[in-house]
Picture 1 (spheres, one colour):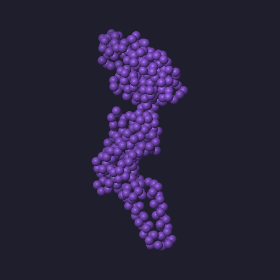
Picture 2 (tube, one colour):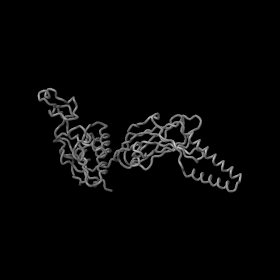
Picture 3 (cartoon, rainbow, N blue to C red):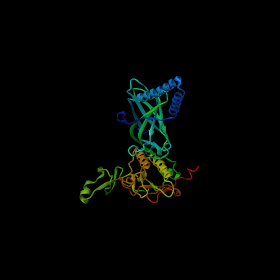
Picture 4 (tube, rainbow, N blue to C red):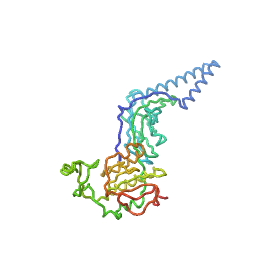
Length: 371
Protein backbone atom coordinates (compact mmCIF):
# COMPACT_ATOMS: atom_id res chain seq x y z
CA UNK A 1 0.00 0.00 0.00
CA UNK A 2 1.57 3.26 -1.04
CA UNK A 3 1.61 6.09 1.48
CA UNK A 4 -0.44 9.15 0.61
CA UNK A 5 1.43 12.26 -0.41
CA UNK A 6 -0.33 15.56 0.06
CA UNK A 7 0.21 19.19 -0.85
CA UNK A 8 -0.51 21.50 2.11
CA UNK A 9 -3.45 23.88 1.78
CA UNK A 10 -1.13 26.85 2.22
CA UNK A 11 0.48 26.02 -1.14
CA UNK A 12 -2.86 25.93 -3.00
CA UNK A 13 -2.56 29.10 -5.06
CA UNK A 14 -5.72 30.73 -6.41
CA UNK A 15 -5.25 31.34 -10.14
CA UNK A 16 -8.77 32.32 -11.25
CA UNK A 17 -12.20 33.40 -10.02
CA UNK A 18 -15.06 33.69 -12.47
CA UNK A 19 -18.76 33.30 -13.22
CA UNK A 20 -20.03 30.69 -15.68
CA UNK A 21 -23.09 30.50 -17.86
CA UNK A 22 -25.10 27.35 -17.18
CA UNK A 23 -28.51 26.14 -18.29
CA UNK A 24 -30.68 27.25 -15.32
CA UNK A 25 -29.04 30.68 -15.33
CA UNK A 26 -29.58 31.07 -19.09
CA UNK A 27 -33.26 30.11 -18.78
CA UNK A 28 -33.72 32.55 -15.89
CA UNK A 29 -31.98 35.33 -17.82
CA UNK A 30 -34.20 34.66 -20.87
CA UNK A 31 -37.35 34.91 -18.74
CA UNK A 32 -36.05 38.15 -17.20
CA UNK A 33 -35.53 39.65 -20.67
CA UNK A 34 -39.05 38.57 -21.71
CA UNK A 35 -40.45 40.31 -18.61
CA UNK A 36 -38.53 43.47 -19.52
CA UNK A 37 -39.82 43.47 -23.11
CA UNK A 38 -43.36 42.81 -21.93
CA UNK A 39 -43.20 45.60 -19.37
CA UNK A 40 -41.86 48.10 -21.90
CA UNK A 41 -44.47 47.16 -24.50
CA UNK A 42 -47.48 47.15 -22.18
CA UNK A 43 -46.29 49.68 -19.57
CA UNK A 44 -47.75 47.36 -16.95
CA UNK A 45 -46.50 48.18 -13.44
CA UNK A 46 -46.83 44.58 -12.30
CA UNK A 47 -44.44 43.41 -15.02
CA UNK A 48 -41.96 46.11 -13.99
CA UNK A 49 -42.15 44.84 -10.42
CA UNK A 50 -41.62 41.25 -11.55
CA UNK A 51 -38.69 42.33 -13.68
CA UNK A 52 -37.12 44.12 -10.71
CA UNK A 53 -37.56 41.05 -8.52
CA UNK A 54 -35.99 38.86 -11.19
CA UNK A 55 -32.95 41.14 -11.51
CA UNK A 56 -32.66 41.36 -7.73
CA UNK A 57 -32.70 37.56 -7.42
CA UNK A 58 -29.97 37.26 -10.04
CA UNK A 59 -27.80 39.85 -8.27
CA UNK A 60 -28.31 38.30 -4.84
CA UNK A 61 -27.50 34.84 -6.19
CA UNK A 62 -24.29 36.11 -7.79
CA UNK A 63 -23.16 38.04 -4.73
CA UNK A 64 -23.87 35.22 -2.27
CA UNK A 65 -22.25 32.52 -4.41
CA UNK A 66 -19.10 34.62 -4.75
CA UNK A 67 -19.02 35.56 -1.06
CA UNK A 68 -19.43 31.93 0.05
CA UNK A 69 -16.25 30.94 -1.81
CA UNK A 70 -14.14 33.65 -0.21
CA UNK A 71 -11.65 32.24 2.29
CA UNK A 72 -11.86 28.72 0.82
CA UNK A 73 -8.70 26.60 0.90
CA UNK A 74 -8.06 23.12 -0.45
CA UNK A 75 -5.40 20.42 -0.44
CA UNK A 76 -5.18 17.15 -2.35
CA UNK A 77 -3.96 13.82 -0.99
CA UNK A 78 -3.03 11.39 -3.76
CA UNK A 79 -1.24 8.03 -3.57
CA UNK A 80 2.26 7.85 -5.02
CA UNK A 81 1.20 5.01 -7.29
CA UNK A 82 -1.80 3.22 -8.73
CA UNK A 83 -2.55 0.25 -10.99
CA UNK A 84 -4.18 0.38 -14.40
CA UNK A 85 -7.73 -0.92 -14.32
CA UNK A 86 -8.04 -0.56 -10.53
CA UNK A 87 -9.81 2.27 -8.65
CA UNK A 88 -7.67 5.25 -7.67
CA UNK A 89 -8.72 7.36 -4.68
CA UNK A 90 -8.01 11.09 -4.53
CA UNK A 91 -8.83 12.80 -1.23
CA UNK A 92 -9.56 16.53 -1.10
CA UNK A 93 -9.57 18.43 2.17
CA UNK A 94 -11.50 21.70 2.13
CA UNK A 95 -11.84 24.35 4.81
CA UNK A 96 -13.16 27.88 4.91
CA UNK A 97 -12.20 30.98 6.90
CA UNK A 98 -15.50 32.65 6.10
CA UNK A 99 -17.36 33.33 9.37
CA UNK A 100 -20.42 34.91 7.72
CA UNK A 101 -21.52 32.69 4.83
CA UNK A 102 -21.11 28.92 4.65
CA UNK A 103 -19.62 27.29 1.55
CA UNK A 104 -22.38 24.92 0.51
CA UNK A 105 -23.18 22.74 -2.49
CA UNK A 106 -19.53 22.52 -3.64
CA UNK A 107 -18.47 20.57 -6.71
CA UNK A 108 -14.76 19.76 -7.01
CA UNK A 109 -13.33 18.88 -10.41
CA UNK A 110 -9.88 18.47 -11.92
CA UNK A 111 -9.11 20.61 -14.96
CA UNK A 112 -6.94 19.50 -17.86
CA UNK A 113 -5.45 22.97 -18.38
CA UNK A 114 -5.08 24.48 -21.85
CA UNK A 115 -1.76 26.28 -21.48
CA UNK A 116 1.57 24.46 -21.43
CA UNK A 117 2.20 25.84 -17.95
CA UNK A 118 -0.95 24.31 -16.48
CA UNK A 119 -1.30 21.24 -18.71
CA UNK A 120 -2.19 17.91 -17.08
CA UNK A 121 -2.24 14.35 -18.40
CA UNK A 122 -5.13 12.86 -16.41
CA UNK A 123 -7.63 13.08 -19.32
CA UNK A 124 -5.49 10.48 -21.10
CA UNK A 125 -6.18 8.04 -18.25
CA UNK A 126 -9.74 8.70 -17.07
CA UNK A 127 -12.68 10.63 -18.57
CA UNK A 128 -13.42 12.76 -15.49
CA UNK A 129 -12.35 13.38 -11.89
CA UNK A 130 -15.22 15.02 -10.00
CA UNK A 131 -16.66 14.83 -6.49
CA UNK A 132 -19.21 16.70 -4.38
CA UNK A 133 -19.09 18.19 -0.88
CA UNK A 134 -22.31 19.39 0.75
CA UNK A 135 -20.63 21.92 3.01
CA UNK A 136 -17.08 23.04 3.82
CA UNK A 137 -16.46 23.53 7.54
CA UNK A 138 -13.78 25.60 9.24
CA UNK A 139 -11.90 22.40 10.08
CA UNK A 140 -10.58 20.55 7.02
CA UNK A 141 -13.35 18.39 5.59
CA UNK A 142 -12.27 15.33 3.56
CA UNK A 143 -14.10 14.21 0.44
CA UNK A 144 -13.09 11.31 -1.81
CA UNK A 145 -13.07 11.17 -5.61
CA UNK A 146 -12.61 7.74 -7.20
CA UNK A 147 -11.48 7.17 -10.77
CA UNK A 148 -10.11 4.19 -12.69
CA UNK A 149 -7.00 4.76 -14.86
CA UNK A 150 -7.25 2.96 -18.17
CA UNK A 151 -3.51 2.37 -18.76
CA UNK A 152 -0.02 2.79 -17.28
CA UNK A 153 2.05 5.96 -17.25
CA UNK A 154 2.56 9.16 -15.29
CA UNK A 155 -0.72 10.82 -14.38
CA UNK A 156 -0.14 14.52 -13.66
CA UNK A 157 -2.58 16.85 -11.93
CA UNK A 158 -2.42 20.64 -12.02
CA UNK A 159 -5.62 22.66 -11.60
CA UNK A 160 -8.58 22.07 -9.27
CA UNK A 161 -11.82 24.01 -9.70
CA UNK A 162 -14.37 24.39 -6.90
CA UNK A 163 -17.73 25.80 -7.95
CA UNK A 164 -21.18 26.34 -6.48
CA UNK A 165 -24.60 27.68 -7.48
CA UNK A 166 -25.56 28.50 -3.88
CA UNK A 167 -28.08 29.76 -2.88
CA UNK A 168 -30.69 29.81 -5.71
CA UNK A 169 -28.95 27.82 -8.45
CA UNK A 170 -29.01 30.80 -10.80
CA UNK A 171 -25.39 32.04 -10.82
CA UNK A 172 -22.49 29.61 -11.07
CA UNK A 173 -19.33 30.93 -9.40
CA UNK A 174 -15.99 29.09 -9.35
CA UNK A 175 -12.50 29.47 -7.89
CA UNK A 176 -9.56 27.64 -9.47
CA UNK A 177 -6.53 26.51 -7.47
CA UNK A 178 -3.08 25.48 -8.67
CA UNK A 179 -2.31 22.11 -7.03
CA UNK A 180 0.55 20.30 -8.81
CA UNK A 181 0.70 16.57 -8.24
CA UNK A 182 1.38 13.30 -9.98
CA UNK A 183 0.53 9.63 -9.63
CA UNK A 184 2.53 6.84 -11.26
CA UNK A 185 0.15 4.30 -12.79
CA UNK A 186 1.73 0.85 -12.97
CA UNK A 187 0.73 -1.81 -15.51
CA UNK A 188 -1.86 -4.30 -14.36
CA UNK A 189 -0.06 -7.60 -13.52
CA UNK A 190 -1.04 -10.39 -15.88
CA UNK A 191 -1.17 -14.10 -15.10
CA UNK A 192 2.14 -15.81 -15.90
CA UNK A 193 2.45 -19.00 -17.95
CA UNK A 194 3.31 -22.37 -16.41
CA UNK A 195 6.96 -22.09 -17.58
CA UNK A 196 7.64 -19.38 -15.01
CA UNK A 197 5.79 -21.26 -12.30
CA UNK A 198 7.89 -24.35 -13.01
CA UNK A 199 11.07 -22.30 -12.69
CA UNK A 200 9.86 -20.62 -9.51
CA UNK A 201 8.96 -23.98 -7.98
CA UNK A 202 12.51 -25.23 -8.50
CA UNK A 203 12.09 -27.55 -11.50
CA UNK A 204 14.76 -25.88 -13.61
CA UNK A 205 17.36 -28.46 -14.66
CA UNK A 206 20.17 -25.94 -14.42
CA UNK A 207 19.63 -24.66 -10.90
CA UNK A 208 22.08 -27.09 -9.26
CA UNK A 209 24.88 -26.58 -11.80
CA UNK A 210 25.12 -22.81 -11.93
CA UNK A 211 28.06 -20.86 -10.51
CA UNK A 212 27.91 -18.80 -7.37
CA UNK A 213 28.01 -15.01 -7.21
CA UNK A 214 29.15 -12.23 -4.88
CA UNK A 215 26.06 -11.75 -2.72
CA UNK A 216 26.73 -14.38 -0.03
CA UNK A 217 29.34 -14.58 2.75
CA UNK A 218 31.77 -17.31 1.65
CA UNK A 219 34.64 -16.12 -0.60
CA UNK A 220 34.46 -17.35 -4.17
CA UNK A 221 36.66 -15.28 -6.50
CA UNK A 222 38.06 -11.83 -7.33
CA UNK A 223 36.81 -9.88 -10.31
CA UNK A 224 36.94 -6.34 -11.74
CA UNK A 225 34.86 -3.63 -10.15
CA UNK A 226 31.56 -2.74 -11.88
CA UNK A 227 29.39 0.37 -11.39
CA UNK A 228 26.98 -0.27 -8.54
CA UNK A 229 29.27 -2.55 -6.53
CA UNK A 230 29.34 -1.76 -2.82
CA UNK A 231 32.55 -0.21 -1.50
CA UNK A 232 32.57 -2.89 1.20
CA UNK A 233 33.27 -5.58 -1.42
CA UNK A 234 36.49 -3.94 -2.69
CA UNK A 235 39.59 -6.11 -2.19
CA UNK A 236 42.08 -3.42 -1.23
CA UNK A 237 45.31 -5.43 -1.27
CA UNK A 238 44.73 -6.97 -4.72
CA UNK A 239 43.58 -3.52 -5.90
CA UNK A 240 46.91 -1.99 -4.81
CA UNK A 241 48.87 -4.85 -6.38
CA UNK A 242 46.98 -4.84 -9.72
CA UNK A 243 46.61 -1.03 -9.84
CA UNK A 244 42.89 -1.29 -10.66
CA UNK A 245 39.72 -1.75 -8.63
CA UNK A 246 38.78 -5.37 -7.96
CA UNK A 247 36.08 -6.77 -5.69
CA UNK A 248 35.50 -10.02 -3.84
CA UNK A 249 32.84 -12.40 -5.15
CA UNK A 250 31.15 -14.43 -2.45
CA UNK A 251 29.37 -17.74 -2.83
CA UNK A 252 25.63 -17.96 -3.23
CA UNK A 253 23.32 -19.99 -5.41
CA UNK A 254 22.91 -17.75 -8.46
CA UNK A 255 19.56 -19.03 -9.64
CA UNK A 256 18.07 -16.59 -7.18
CA UNK A 257 18.99 -13.76 -9.60
CA UNK A 258 16.74 -13.39 -12.62
CA UNK A 259 16.69 -10.72 -15.35
CA UNK A 260 13.47 -9.91 -17.17
CA UNK A 261 14.01 -8.78 -20.75
CA UNK A 262 11.10 -7.17 -22.58
CA UNK A 263 11.55 -7.91 -26.28
CA UNK A 264 8.75 -6.12 -28.18
CA UNK A 265 7.84 -7.22 -31.66
CA UNK A 266 5.24 -6.10 -34.16
CA UNK A 267 2.39 -6.33 -31.66
CA UNK A 268 1.24 -4.10 -28.82
CA UNK A 269 3.83 -3.73 -26.06
CA UNK A 270 1.28 -3.14 -23.28
CA UNK A 271 0.41 -6.86 -22.80
CA UNK A 272 4.15 -7.60 -22.57
CA UNK A 273 4.61 -5.01 -19.83
CA UNK A 274 1.63 -6.43 -17.93
CA UNK A 275 3.13 -9.89 -18.26
CA UNK A 276 6.50 -8.58 -17.05
CA UNK A 277 4.77 -7.04 -14.03
CA UNK A 278 3.12 -10.35 -13.19
CA UNK A 279 6.43 -12.19 -13.59
CA UNK A 280 8.27 -9.68 -11.37
CA UNK A 281 5.69 -10.01 -8.59
CA UNK A 282 5.67 -13.81 -8.80
CA UNK A 283 9.45 -14.14 -8.73
CA UNK A 284 10.06 -11.65 -5.92
CA UNK A 285 7.32 -13.30 -3.87
CA UNK A 286 9.22 -16.60 -4.21
CA UNK A 287 12.46 -15.02 -3.00
CA UNK A 288 14.22 -14.22 -6.29
CA UNK A 289 16.17 -11.03 -6.93
CA UNK A 290 14.84 -9.62 -10.20
CA UNK A 291 16.21 -6.98 -12.57
CA UNK A 292 14.91 -5.51 -15.82
CA UNK A 293 16.59 -5.25 -19.22
CA UNK A 294 15.46 -3.26 -22.22
CA UNK A 295 15.16 -4.62 -25.75
CA UNK A 296 18.87 -3.93 -26.42
CA UNK A 297 19.97 -5.84 -23.32
CA UNK A 298 20.94 -2.74 -21.32
CA UNK A 299 19.96 -2.48 -17.68
CA UNK A 300 16.68 -0.59 -17.23
CA UNK A 301 16.35 -1.46 -13.53
CA UNK A 302 19.19 -3.15 -11.60
CA UNK A 303 18.75 -6.10 -9.28
CA UNK A 304 18.27 -4.77 -5.78
CA UNK A 305 16.48 -7.46 -3.77
CA UNK A 306 14.46 -6.78 -0.66
CA UNK A 307 10.76 -6.15 -0.15
CA UNK A 308 10.75 -2.96 -2.25
CA UNK A 309 12.43 -4.47 -5.31
CA UNK A 310 9.17 -5.37 -7.05
CA UNK A 311 7.93 -1.79 -6.51
CA UNK A 312 11.02 -0.43 -8.30
CA UNK A 313 10.47 -2.88 -11.16
CA UNK A 314 6.80 -1.92 -11.49
CA UNK A 315 7.74 1.77 -11.50
CA UNK A 316 10.27 1.13 -14.29
CA UNK A 317 7.61 -0.73 -16.30
CA UNK A 318 5.14 2.12 -15.72
CA UNK A 319 7.61 4.60 -17.24
CA UNK A 320 8.72 2.26 -20.05
CA UNK A 321 9.26 4.25 -23.24
CA UNK A 322 8.32 7.61 -21.72
CA UNK A 323 11.93 8.64 -21.04
CA UNK A 324 14.32 7.16 -23.64
CA UNK A 325 17.34 8.62 -21.83
CA UNK A 326 16.49 6.65 -18.72
CA UNK A 327 16.58 3.27 -20.44
CA UNK A 328 19.93 1.52 -20.30
CA UNK A 329 21.51 4.19 -18.12
CA UNK A 330 21.16 2.52 -14.73
CA UNK A 331 24.23 1.20 -12.86
CA UNK A 332 24.62 -2.52 -12.35
CA UNK A 333 26.00 -5.59 -14.06
CA UNK A 334 25.05 -9.13 -15.02
CA UNK A 335 26.79 -12.25 -13.74
CA UNK A 336 27.56 -15.22 -15.94
CA UNK A 337 25.35 -17.41 -13.75
CA UNK A 338 22.29 -15.17 -13.79
CA UNK A 339 19.08 -16.41 -15.35
CA UNK A 340 17.26 -14.58 -18.11
CA UNK A 341 13.55 -14.53 -18.85
CA UNK A 342 12.67 -13.07 -22.26
CA UNK A 343 9.15 -11.70 -22.62
CA UNK A 344 8.18 -11.39 -26.26
CA UNK A 345 5.39 -12.02 -28.75
CA UNK A 346 6.92 -15.36 -29.80
CA UNK A 347 5.69 -18.83 -28.94
CA UNK A 348 6.38 -20.07 -25.43
CA UNK A 349 9.18 -22.61 -25.05
CA UNK A 350 8.37 -25.38 -22.63
CA UNK A 351 10.55 -26.10 -19.59
CA UNK A 352 12.28 -24.00 -16.97
CA UNK A 353 14.54 -21.01 -17.37
CA UNK A 354 18.09 -21.46 -18.57
CA UNK A 355 21.08 -19.28 -17.63
CA UNK A 356 21.33 -16.12 -19.71
CA UNK A 357 20.76 -16.95 -23.38
CA UNK A 358 18.55 -18.21 -24.88
CA UNK A 359 16.21 -17.88 -21.88
CA UNK A 360 12.52 -18.64 -22.12
CA UNK A 361 10.21 -16.61 -24.38
CA UNK A 362 6.81 -15.83 -22.89
CA UNK A 363 4.02 -14.73 -25.24
CA UNK A 364 1.60 -11.93 -24.51
CA UNK A 365 -1.19 -14.53 -24.48
CA UNK A 366 -0.22 -18.10 -23.70
CA UNK A 367 -2.40 -21.17 -23.65
CA UNK A 368 -2.83 -20.74 -19.88
CA UNK A 369 -4.17 -17.20 -20.39
CA UNK A 370 -6.49 -17.90 -23.29
CA UNK A 371 -10.18 -17.79 -22.35
